[in-house]
Length: 105
Image (cartoon, rainbow, N blue to C red):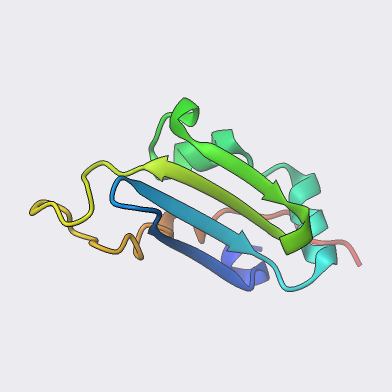
């Protein structure tokens, strides 16, 4: 199963002109807890997928929101002429294909 198959939302967006934030949200606690226990969503895995230094990442496990959230520095400031994604909304794609172990029933 892919991460995109078991989440309610995977997104990226600006967190100011110099940062991007990512949200991985679930609609039910059982799936969220399963993914959390599997260990496939960690700061180290996310840094590798996104291509940033894990030490530059702020990573949060938000049990009350059934979500994982992390923020990284943007490579270029939002609005820079060389920035191809002004709003940071297309940066989540590498997360969609993360393999999640099947949930046993």
